[in-house]
Image 1 (cartoon, one colour):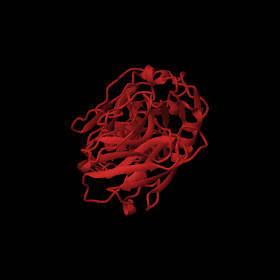
Image 2: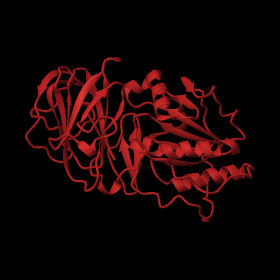
Image 3: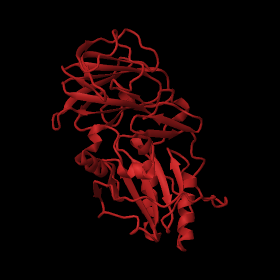
Image 4: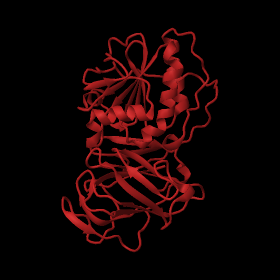
Length: 360
């Protein structure tokens, strides 16, 4: 989901789309006297008729939403950039629901398992998303908007016109000001013009941009970078991999018998390991059991030791955890000072699929 970075906005290209992270920090979320942002007319809001299902709502239509201000949020549930944006979108949905705002999340999948409505429904409940969700598994809404990014916000006025878009994390103050402006244009006189702060904890907390020197990296053959096991990757073959004695920053390796597929790498026998040299406060791994309902136990080390206070929310201080579903797992959240560290995860059972590392 991230392949290149720019100053202020980090852009990641992928085969299916792009997720973006902002390098700009919020400058404060208090009331402001700045002039209203100048907005353009980007055309009529496209149809939502391509949705394959809806959650938290009956099906909604562009025509039926006329008279309401609409915020369209393109997301996919394993995207760390979207997770860090979510506290603000959730807060806006709650704050402005009674003065004319409708927030609609459009879930357009990246990984194959994100096409499964069961997984999407589970994530909506686990992550506590209260607003309507259009399931866009066939990418018809994505294509109708001409979208290319996760996350992406489209701001639609009460006349059904797209007036602004925001690609990626950050710029929350301006985004909320635009919501307020569109609500005011629509004749809503009860709009409160202070700004939300976002209740950002856990994986939703803003990245430590100053210490983030590792970028997202896929574990499947098609898009991985920095793979350092001797002999290289073997596409579609059961292979007994070994990890080198030393890894450079942003390099990773396998140990044990794995099959590297295009999208993911699958463990064939117990006690396989993934080793990664990284530099970031947070480390996440998108993974899941290859067979639903078959948990896979794991143990994490950092620089050869249990993580202790640096453990993420999905394991204990000794580094022990269990993969139970296909999602993003937060494995490391460490305190400053941040330095180059060696992460190691050993799976005590076979059958895990590993898709992608993300950092924060």
